Image 1 (cartoon, rainbow, N blue to C red):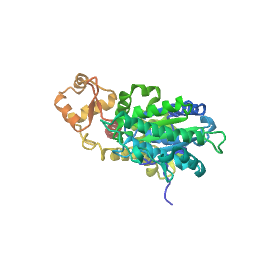
Image 2: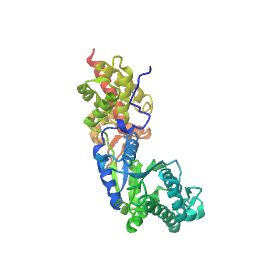
Image 3: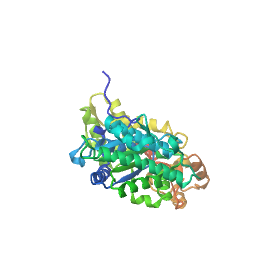
Image 4: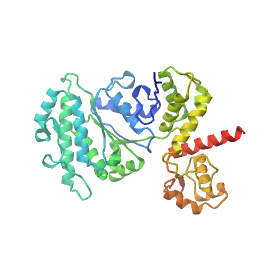
Length: 405
């Protein structure tokens, strides 16, 4: 029988194995409870690739409908939609609203259809001018934008009146709409204005039982709020950073416990540091530790093998053209190693003093290949925390090799 491995680096963590992010989860669930009283609450979760944004959103999606007594007993009508590249706001809203219909009983959906008229056809909502998908792109008129807003409000207000009514059997507390990969929206410049108008109008009408949870990168969050500063009154920005050591340790413990494998918690705390708190790297380490284990007990030998395999996996993919893994470092590699060790943006002067060699001729090349980026303060930093993790694992392996001689 094949060994069961609870860690899957290439998939979203299932809710029963999710660990950490307690502050963010409780903050979101606490505000979602306000929907019961008609007080809307929306969120923008952002962070770099692989930081666990989608896993957090999927956990919130799960908690929003399971009536967990420890997390505000939420019972919401939910939808999750991952935006495809180049989609317009009207199309994204249409798809996400149609996802809601999967949780609406047929008789209620028919009643909603009678109220919204031409905005529904064959049980599916249609948003746009005269039933045709409308794109909001630079140059679109305010009339176009408000058409989408008004149609969305009409649909949502009628859903709220139907599924949130105490007279409705199995009625819900409110609605949660999750939009993932928002960087793919072709017209993200108008997204904040449209969504803010939707939730504000519903609030004014006494129907503030709708929450949006958006997921994107840091630059998406910046663009979202810069186009409509008033959106900050409707959306709470939630940044996801690397996980602290205790939460990272719990991720592994929860996975090991799920398959009744033995482990030493002290060894977990010692070795998990190599992942740098990065959820994707944690999952890879956990996965590899299970794969290398031979006796149902994760010991230091298993950890050594897992770290080696993880380092090999990371360096053989995205970062192989940025850093010389496993070999004597060049000046370029030394620059990257310093940035990885410091784990903070450094000025060119600071880097120069630490390298003790001229770095200026190498900075342009490192920026061109995407290994480093420059902050608004003109300081240099690695392109991602995952890259830092790959370098740190490589350094750990090199240090162990030296000490073993």
